[in-house]
Image (cartoon, rainbow, N blue to C red):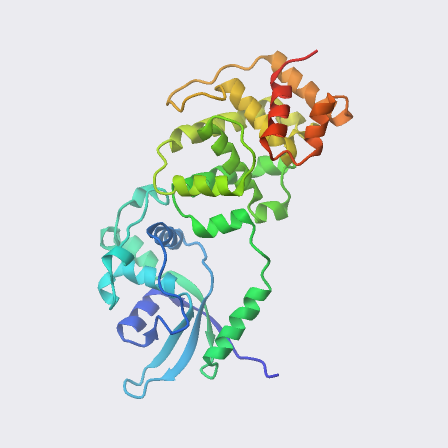
Length: 357
């Protein structure tokens, strides 16, 4: 079988705009999906471009030279929603089928507070230039590749991908307030996840620390211990996607809890079992309860309560007993399971919260 000659190059956004204006760029071939991105997804893309961060490769197909204009033409094979988003933001009048309801959007504050609600003409010349000069990584398929070949290529590419887990699916679905907040919080704790040996490099690559952070945030919002549930986590992302009024309070409390755990147990976390995913939810719940109260209302400027040294000593002792398997049988049974249902989590929470001799 002959090897396909694929050109790998970079093109600026300004190049794509120029081609589209000159009608030498086919944006929506027959086999491409129609534009279905939500405003939050579009805002996230523009913010990514403004930050100079990479985005997935755009695939084009060379369509040869137009015999009337003598201009080379290109067809978008994969990336039309990204390019349509850029065109709609920079100059919506360029899109022949522009629909304000479908295509109009501005940068959201959850993605960039300094540029929130700004359209392209409201940006400074430097920022406008940064967008127009941003370079997409582009692969150009030769003109002899037909539609059947294109479909076969993408089926082959997709067949080598692993199945997305629940959090990876959320990452591709949501782009609003809740996701932005949770991902920021999880990223801030990266060194702790590593130091506490809660997550491996592969776990973090697959966003498992983000999913756990989501559960912590849901605990604060719901004011109760709940089991790990994909539908419940999905519902939280959906509910707070556009409007998340409790965000500032929740983020502050999350920071306080994580800092307190590190301050009180940080040096001994490697020697205790609490860094494990099977136990850390109950540890976080215990500290949150001690600092604020599990059922505390989300009111601003609430000062955390002091935690006695006696309780810290007990938590360390409880961890040692779990390691040595001298803790009560109900506790050991709870730690032996996956501890993702409320019963086991409540058992561990009660054990850590009730000082024993």
